[in-house]
Image (cartoon, rainbow, N blue to C red; front, side):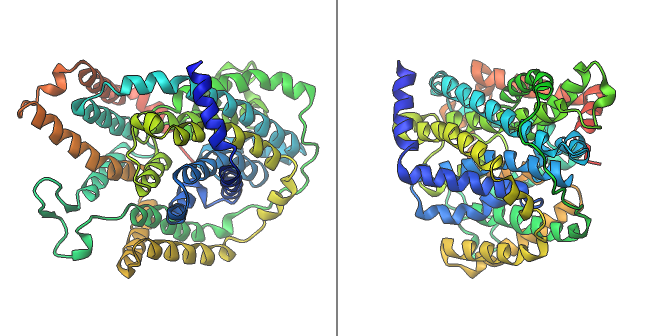
Length: 500
């Protein structure tokens, strides 16, 4: 009964005309940036953060959430029709989805991707709704030492599950932690790492860092690959899969939904890890593995269900604990802070219309996405032929206007350009920037909880080991490190994240 009462609050919030409109805007933009290779939800949300200043908190989060899980739908369209993943989690969809498209079955691939994503998104949202209350009650027992240990575990897991070289992921995390320390120390009032520049007294702005690294950096990198875009397959064919397609797909959809629901909660996991894991599972379970890579519909149904489920359940750490599990969730925390909302379990009691409104909007958004992706496929096919060189000037202008509008500061615009060049350098060096953003967001929170825990324990560091929750979380962190030391796990990790 308590869950039904909460859901009624969420329904009232999510179905208000303004929130319904912003949910539609979010999922439409998400589909658009998923379809157009090179944009992606991280860069788009980073660019739209300044826009959320003028929205209510629930409308802002509903719109940004719609962009994230909407991009999972749109990414499959680009992967199937152009053999380019519009979103990184759709990378494995290229293998069998594009093979189906070349054999004249693009419609069936797009249809099963949309239907599987809808089912997985609905199931994962139900899991979020059911798990939210008990997890939030458990989170209220956390003290400063427990929160610090949880953040340490999150950063370790994000490094272990990050794409690319492990040592580069560690370096990016440490750089993010250092960037988060710039500014005035909250305890002593002394300036740290400002180098006498008054504009840095409040530290680097979240919008500046995220928009520079993920917005401008990605734009510069995508201009290099404009000439590599393949031709668009324009003959889509029937969108509804055949009876044999359904027979082959329903088990992969169920397995992908379950796998994505579980892996989405992991820090650093989310949609990408879920889709890779689902593809490897389906290939291992297949009676004829030689079909994979040549147009096996199971290789589309499983990963597309998994990535959407993973995108939905990655909201659990954000909504329940106030901690980001990936770069998009870090941006969502930035949006909450912009509106003066302190992320954490108290949001459920203090702002129930926000908390439950976002959850119910996921159901609404998934239904809207099903309507957007199947009947309007012709529009998305035409958009795929738009040259990127015609898009990037408008995106750059939007970035600069957005950054300037936050503080009316030209210095912020120059900083954003600097971080954009840094982001481009990271791409050239094959350094995954997501751990940097997680470190940047969690760094100040870790420092605050570390100091608070030490003050309450009168300087005794054993508090992190004597509290059961804290000790368990640290042991899990050690377990991740031990796992990373195993040669077999490292080899599997390298194969899973290989993009070539």
